Image (tube, rainbow, N blue to C red; front, side, top):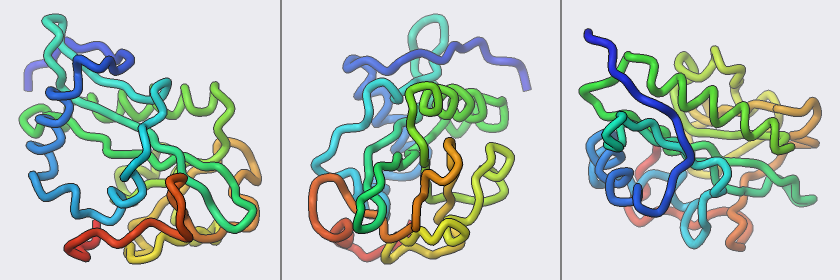
Length: 181
């Protein structure tokens, strides 16, 4: 494949429509039914941790966002990574990896201690993610092998526990379809 010129930059409100298009093409229009979306309902992504990869002409090629969540009864603050997506025609060019590196670097630099996500272990393991069960973390309704975690600060997961939305409730409400992510 021919290399693609792009830069990773902070997301701006004018990117919203392009980001939604990338997400629809990468995950399909029913992506909102995935379990992890329930944790995002009524909550804004962390603006300082929302990035896009774009071409010199400004067209958005990829996106990554982090959302605040809580873990356990204490509760421990954490970040829910996702979605991360790249235009399907441009996959395997390193754009997703560049977005991951930027997002995780900034999350650590800004003092966040714990990142969780729902995804494929083989893709995220090189970034340091491990099964969340090793930290005692649970996302009700999600397949345990797909829930991954990364401690940016040692011991940040505390005693573990159930992920909860910062919007309230003991855990995020089930999506309408009950589909797993």
